[in-house]
Amino acid sequence: MSAYKLTLDQARAALAKLMEKYTVIAPVMNDNRLDYAEVTDARDVILDDRLPYKSPKETVFPRVENVIRFLEGRVEEAQDIKPILLIGAKPCDIAALNDLDGIFTSDKGKFKDSFYINRRNCLTVVGAGCTSKKTACFCDERGIDMTFSPECDGFLNFVDGDILYEPLTAKGDGLFTGSEAEPPKRDTKPEETLKIEAKEADVFATMPWESYVEGCIGCGTCTYLCPTCHCFNLRDAEDKGIVTRTRVWDSCMYPKFTLHASGHNPRTEKYQRFRQRVLHKYLYIPENYGFTACSGCGRCIRSCPGGLNIRDTVSDIMERLEEAKE
Amino acid sequence: MMDYNKQSQKLKETAAKLLEEGTVEAVLGLKDNPEVGWPTPYFARTAGDVENLVWNEACFTNLANYLLDMRDKKVAIAAKGCDVRSIINLIVENQLKRENIVIIGIECSGMKQNDSLAAGCDACPSSIPNMYDIVVGADGSDTYKDLEMPNSGENVTEWAKNTTVDERFERFKKEIDKCILCYACRQACQGCYCKACFMDRKATPWEQVDPDTSTKMAFHLTRAMHLAGRCTDCGACEKVCPSGVNLKYLFKGLSEFVEEFYDFKAGVDMEAKPFANQYKQDDQQVAFLGGDTIVGV
Image (cartoon, rainbow over all chains, first blue to last red; front, side, top):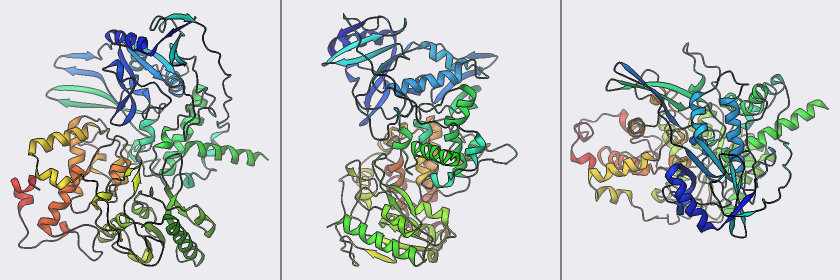
């Protein structure tokens, strides 16, 4: 497909039109902070080099989602969803969405998640690249090109103050149109260098996990901001005779996450919980699904009050594994 | 005036001495963390480690909480006024032993977070910690200078006096609208050390991670009541909040209420008894009977 060139004003006008059909999610200012949020005015959309504070995973995996409602004598299933258009997703966030797809929809998983699939089918993703690496970003080490991602429906490039829209799938075709132009040349994707290739036994008990978590206060902010963390809990609540079953985010950084009904808890210590978070992304998901579920966005590092650092932790583990080999 | 370089120097020298002499097992302080944007907690365990310690205008983290994980060990802590108030509260509540802690009392005239005054600093009464073993003055010397404290101009007490119940309730709702129930505030709070928080109890209807408004209200209001007379105004809850909830609007009034009616302020006197553990025949009844007095605080 070829690309289309349009001015910023033309793009905003097109976006305003798209808002009639789609719920548009894009980076907008939210209390002095850039967040992916629903757009109410096309002029509010900010497409620059900054990485939004939260990840866009809520578009496909909301913090709270009504799964089913039991009313008197009948059951009401989840409602249909208006098409969602995610604009300005950064390549790291697109990579993370693909990780979630792999977990929730692939044949490799034991279950296909119909609620996720429902939302994902309604979602169109238009990416936008970064021009610089921010502090704590490590997408390059995770093998992600910060300037471009081919794994979305369309991509917005910025050329001399104008926008060059590049449709990549049928879904993305026709969202923005203008004079035809050549798509920009691409750099080659960086090599994925930050990964754990080891057996669980080699890292589980042998790495200095306690030293990595001294600053942890157990707040779980890392899991809430992470674009690939996807653990959830189901709960039923009754109000005035109507029972609603909701799916809500959970966090492996909370002590109660693994509390058994018997009272036993296999992960009572902070280091055990952090170990689970790191190894889930870098060891268990690779074993079960064939990819590492970390996109190197750095949100967990930037927002950690205790200064925990998943990049440094994984790189330290890699060094120790290398030393052990010698 | 503040001289952070001299303060850092004094802190490093003191920490190295304490570790070399074997007086303490660890010195709890902060180390540089450009990725987060401000220094984060660090445990210096050898004299070589102390080079990593830093002290600058972004050292706003309250470190008192970390002492709870090391309560049976002898530890030194680089502490500002707010850390010390929290340590005192934890000693008063029998969580820490005074003899296990060496307080390196660092004079502080307010910290910065993201280029603005850090939460809690404008409510801080003094640049001098309430209790200390080793003095690190504003200029790194052995004497405190008693500096003027910053004022952000945001006077919560005045605001509370000049607003109606409805206005305050609207404000409260606006603030907790932002809350995502991640419990970072609870985790960062020196007073929230319960082994099992009421929010984590099973079999209660408000035990939820479901961030609907009533659950959020139940959490924040109950937590606030649990912290009445125990909150040390350190601002740790606001500093860690990923959603920017201004909790001072909830807590400031409670502290002032306890001070006014029970003559008790948390974090001042190590020998004090917790106000809720005392009974006096002439205790004010307002907390039980309600009425305008409470909301008028």
